[in-house]
Length: 271
Image (cartoon, rainbow, N blue to C red; front, side):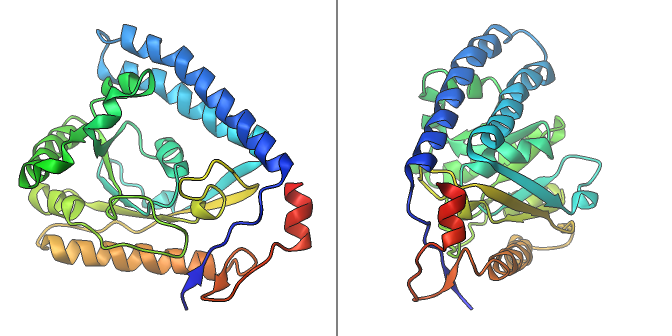
């Protein structure tokens, strides 16, 4: 059964809490970014530890201001050596929280993000796989070359195969970049699913209280498999797990195309 997520209406309390979180996020970014840039001469892992403090603060601050926490299942599936993480992309939440479980990590991102003041400048110090999306096949070559180098240097490579954030209950075509990197390097894939889009919806300023469920799946061995086989296996597990997470929260989502109003309990919690 497909689901359509419709966030409850934003109450003044939700707006205020979300604004407090955003303010704190901006302040800590401005404070930490100069330290990261000044630490350019330090080893990569030392720079990463500085940036990780940003992650720790934001996770804590999200709980304090928005009463949004998370629980994780499947930590035993995390391999001892860095691998390729293919993750569902519903929210900005996972770009923060995945760092608690896969560290140090690099993302595949558009290079324009590195031009952002403070945040982008600090991000550039972490050696992300920054690509020019307009470059076509050259962009794929950048992912292959830089991705292999990052894995060899001991970094996790985190890729969102859908390429962009999608609303909870929706999906887009899985691109082959991460699976192709796995095929060419022989490095295994760790599939990751979650329901963060229910609490921090795509492109939303409002954060809703609750507990995000993060599930780390069984390792996908890439040896002897084609990129399409790896991609299909990852997509089947990720989308199947996300569907189960959403189906078990029928109070938060509703079968398409039914309309839904916020329940009294939700209004009370978010007021």
